[in-house]
Length: 155
Image (tube, rainbow, N blue to C red):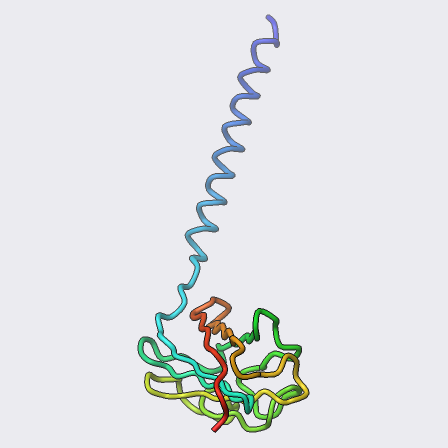
């Protein structure tokens, strides 16, 4: 009796077993860790030449400040020092931001509340009248909002 006919059958069975095992592993990984959607929230921003950047939560889901990450660009150029939200004192920023940007803030950022930070004159680029400031808000690592405003006169 010849063993040659068994080789293709065994190879086919092994290939099928590997394919099924791979499908089970991929299916389990996808089912176990679905991506968490970003909270639906709406914001409005403003900036002035004093270095103040204000973001108002207009509506939607409340946000825990410790899950926030904020990135700021001026005329397309990122700030040299980005705000480590929430914070009280940080390089490149005036001390004492307000609202959910302040590390002493308690509770969640609710609709109607405004957070403010002031970019120090030592941080580059500075806020000049007419410049475009882009503010990106991330919650839990997912971008939740992208805002763009023109810098206005201080006061």
